[in-house]
Image (tube, rainbow, N blue to C red):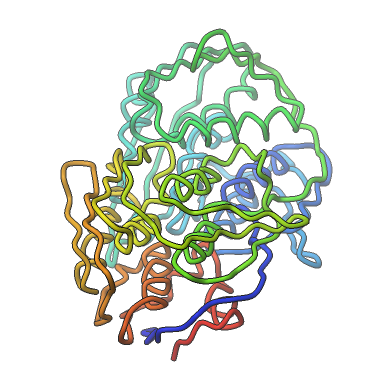
Length: 422
C-alpha cells in the first residue's frame, strides 16, 4: 500500500501504545508459568502475534479480552520438534530457540521477510559444539525454516555483547528451566544493555532468580518455576519517541502513559532532545517537547539504536553538524536502517552521509518532499511520515504495510492528530 503524506501540523494528545519489547517478555513469562496471567494495556501487532503463536506451539492458551491478553501457561504437550511461526520477529526467534531446546529438544522455526538474513550465528556457534544440529533451508520471497535439534544443557555460557542483547535474553529465559545452575557471561562492550535489564525485570517479577556475580555475569539457579502474575504493559518509549521528536520540530502533541523510571533504554530520547536545545514539558502525567531552535549534537546511540532514525530527522533540521554514533546495529534490522535513513533524508533535500557506523548530518533550513522508499520497514515509514510534516511538498511513500509489525493503528493516530495522507 502506497501513501502520499502532505505537510501538516500535528497537535493533540495520544496514549503511548503498549511497549512491544515488554510485551514479548511478559508474554513469555506468562506462557512459562503454571496458571493464568492477564496482561492489560496490550496491543496486538505482527510481532507480538508471532510470540503468541510460538507460545501456543508450547501448549499455552492465548486469547485477547478487552485490550488485555489472557495466557494460560504451557501444559507440557508438544510434538517432536514443534513448529514455531516467528514471522519477521527477530525477538521471537532469538527468544524461542533456547526455550525450544530446553523444553522440546529443539524446533522448526518458520521465518519470513528479512528475518532469515539477520544474524543467528551467535547461537549456532554456541550450540553446535555442544552437540546440537543446525540447518537453515530457504524458500522464496524470504521464507525460510531454521531447524534446531538438541537439548539445552546447564553449564557456563559466554556470549558477545556487541551483536544483539536478544541472544542474552533468550538464554536468560531458558536457563532457569534446567536441572542445575548455569552461568552466563556477556563480553563487553554490551549494546542495548537496557533490554537485558528489561528481561531480568520481567523474570524477577515472575519469581525467577537471576544473581549478578559481576558486571554482565549472571548465575541462574536451575529447577525454577515461573509464577503467574497479572500486570500492565508500559507505554512504548520507542514509538512515543516519534511524536516527541515531532514536537521538537514544531508539533504540539502530548503523550500519556510513559514511565520516566522505566528500564526501557529509549526513554533517553528526552535527554537527546534536551542536548539539541529542546525543553521537556510535564503536566499531570503528560509529556511533550518544545523547541524554539535546534542545534547540532554529538550523540552515542549504540544502546538505543531504534530512536536513531527519528533523531536523525531532528538533526537534519538543526543548525550545524550532528553525528549519531554507534548505529551499526541498524544495518541488521528489518532493513539496513543506517543506509535507509541517509537515503530518505537526502532524497527529501537533506545532507546526510554514512561514516562507518555513524550518521553525519549537516543541518538544512528546510526539506522539499519527493518520492522515497520505506524499505518495508515500520521505523522507516514513521520517519517518512514525520519528515512530511516539515517538507515544503508532499512525500510519496511506496509501501506502508509494515506498520502492522509494531503499531497497526499508527496511521489512524497520525490522522487524528492532524497528519494528512491519502
